Length: 218
Image (cartoon, rainbow, N blue to C red; front, side, top):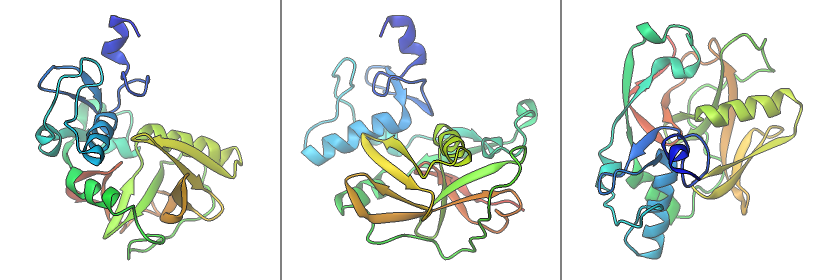
C-alpha cells in the first residue's frame, strides 16, 4: 500500500476506511472496527495494543470515549438531502463487546423482545434495513455489510459471509440468523425490513456502536 492510499484505505482490511478513527498516539487512522479488533485481540493475549502501521502502543481510552457524527440518513431515509441532515452522535460500547467476547458470545439466538414483522422483499426503490438482534433492541448493520446482504439476498443466495474484527460470520437467509463461522451454535436473530416494517422497532446503534439516543422510525 503506497502513502497516498493510506489516506483512503485501511491498513488492516485494505478497504476504504469506514467510520474512520485516528490513533492519537501516532495519528494513523483506520476503520473503527478494525482498530477495535486490534484492541480486543491484544486484550485477549494480555498485551499492550499497538498501531498496526508503526507499532506505537496506544490506550483504549480513545475508543471508549470516542464519539462520531452519524447521519440519520445512513438508514437510507433520505440519501439525497445530506446538506439538510440532522446529525446524531454515537458512542462505542467497547467494554460491553469485550465482556461478550470473553464470555464466548451469546448462548442461543438473541432476539430482542420487540415486534419482528419481516416480510418477503419489497421493491428495491424502498429503503431496506438489515438488523441483527441484541439484548434490549436491534442493531443496524454497517453500510458495507447492508449492501452485501441485500445484494446476496436479492440474488437468491442462501447465505452471505462477512468479516468482523478478524472473525468470519455467516448470515443464513433461510433461518434469518447470524453466527460465527467457527461456532454454529451461538447465534443472533437477523431481520430485513423496510421503513414501514421498522416502525416501533428499537434500534440501539450501528455495527456494535451505540447511538447517543435510541433511534426508531416514527
